[in-house]
Length: 116
Length: 113
Image (cartoon, rainbow over all chains, first blue to last red):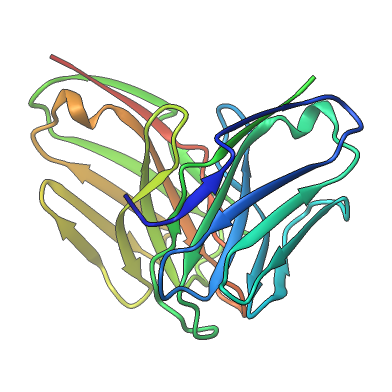
């Protein structure tokens, strides 16, 4: 158990809908990252939030957006869902102190999103 | 552009064997490399983290090495057990002002009793 929690566990949506996924970071951590993992693939970096601001983004369109709250929990929002958005969405938390931060990232159990 | 490759994609061994999983990366400018374990449909569990200045890390039956100059890391598992069956992922942190990780596609290991 890493102390990182995600909700919901599973979610089924239809194409064109919007979805919000939630993540609670481990105590003492100030940074949350989101990853998308398609079946049989490694996770792909979506974006990272540090001190409530986006701090780096991967190759994902603007319909993927996020928020980080003062308690360092985070949301991932995906608008206009497409079939290819079906994946396991993972969040990871760490205590980030800048470019030379060396802390391990701790991952939550993930949310399985299915888009029909 | 940093790319991470893991070979083999799948591996099946009898219980008790020692084994090596391989990870290669194209850009040696990394801050650290991390090995994770993932059980089917689950999140990632961190196994070992090697800083760019280190050559290896050990935890129990696991030993990870890092050779930045050649862009390679190996994860050595001693005396494998059926409970080691899982997908093993390596990830590099390329540095910069984020903690972004770049993952390989993983090696799925099956240890047969």
